[in-house]
Amino acid sequence: MRNIRLAAAQLGPIQKDESRQAVVRRMIDLMDDAKMKGAEFIVYPELALTTFFPRWHHEERAEADIWFEREMPSAATQPLFDRAAQHGMAMSFGYAELTPEGRHFNTSIIVDKEGRIVGKYRKVHLPGHDEFDPERTHQHLEKRYFEPGDLGFPVWRILGGLVGMCICNDRRWPETYRVMGLQGVELVVLGFNTPSVNSQNSSEGLEKRMFHHKLSLQAGAYQNATWVVAVAKAGVEDGHHLMGGTCIVNPDGEIVAELEGEEDGVLVHDCDLEATRFGKETIFDFARHRRIEHYGPITAQVGVRLPPG
Image (cartoon, rainbow, N blue to C red; front, side):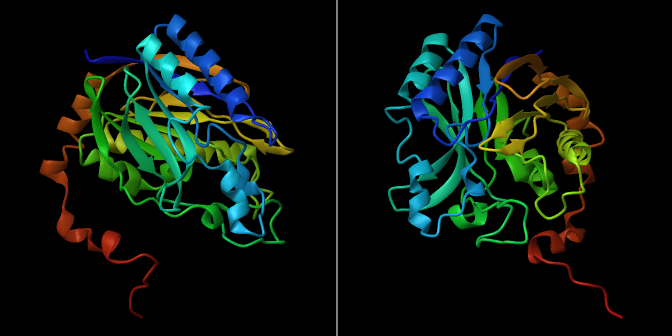
């Protein structure tokens, strides 16, 4: 057994006027709770430090820079790093990153038990649009405020296992999991901020959106024989509802733990990384079964090309 006792730390809504310091205090409270429950690795949501600001249209793009972090850790987030080191707890959380070169990314990091950043991922699959759209019920302007990630889908050796990250919409794309699967990933951690209403199809409904959320996680876990941990920021945030759905999926694609509700809360579960071995050595033994000579279109084209005739 190679066990990681993991805490999925869901955040309830973060209102537009809530300070970084107040949010970090909430995150520390969740970390303290996780420590009391024996967790050694805590995972927080996407954009964990702020409201989901891509719902707001700034005419001048630079006006949105107030939501971005210019350094990590910062003065506001240092107490979170200090508490993690004090507890000897690894952590992962998402934030909006503004680089010294002026580039903007939707970013997530892994911090080791000593409080050091050891892994960084930048969201690859940005959903939404880049200009104000009056036809939508609400805006989803990630393409306006972020660049697509430029770091690929790395996997890191940490806590005795192979851990990867992705963010929100990445979970819906099979390529996300497969690239990490080809590096032997045993645990994928991800945060999300997902509106409960489809801005282009309001009749879709929360039930179907939750179904697609879980389907994506379960398929990625099963097809790559890996644990997947998905953590929500949820609830009514500045008048807009974000769905919950914080859960942990085992390498057989089964949901083994779920967090009820849409408020701050911690879901703790033991993830045995040895449980990934059977799938990786049998039906998803890539070295024996993959036929890459037939997969060319996956990386050779972006859109659909219809067959002749």
